[in-house]
Image 1 (cartoon, rainbow, N blue to C red):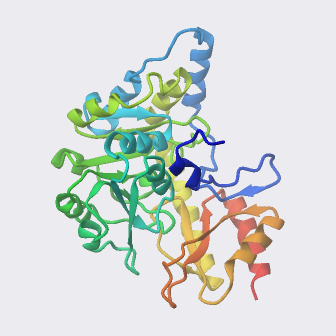
Image 2 (cartoon, rainbow, N blue to C red):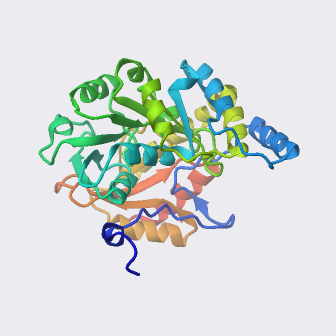
Length: 356
């Protein structure tokens, strides 16, 4: 079909993580929360259903913005809501990037950034993380062109590492464009970059309720930016981008900080156990600030291990980043989401049986 724009035909679309159906697979491949969401979420959604769905939802998701602002310390006009944080990333790219423009992001990180740039017919400028997952000055003055937008996954995927806020602040000051700090996993980390939003209009933080609040199936995220930035982004978003069920559920979720603290504690404890055992099995594992760990191996080919795990009913994510390895550092690895203790025990037992 010849009706599509040539760059759309030529691009490779984003491929989400595998989503098998049924309860027989131990699913540790897409960083989902293994626990059920707060009971307050289910009650809030039930009330909306009882009241009826015949009316359009609030286009601004005001109830969520007010409650999230209370929790995070921002006025509601600093918050923009979306259908998952991915929609916020899409809105930002549509608002700021045009054909031929440059989009900069660190590598390896979230591959969706490339897809968003490709849709806009923009150019991608990938700047490698250092071997210790720090980010050098090349991120601010790469020779590939002046960026219109920069993305930083922080904590990062797949590594689970964090660029400290003071370093992020320095990068934002040096960049000639807005810096989107994608904090999808920040509730599992020891630090965050929200304070930078107040200090620099170029810093925009995006977050999701999918991971820490166990709401992957609800699809709700938000961005925090200075009000005059939000005002422009509102022009680009769909009119009713968040439905009534997601607004009610997300508002109830962020209101239940006691549930978040309890669930976070369980995940961090299991993460520590998973990291220790993987190292005992010979893997190199970076200390994680997320709800997953990144495991490489100095000698063992990992794609066959991934396939064997899958055949045994345990699904993890095998990822390969060409050009990242340097002969010592591997450019592929297994990203293992933190499941329940029972799920992780089963994964580790099967993994131990597969390794020499």
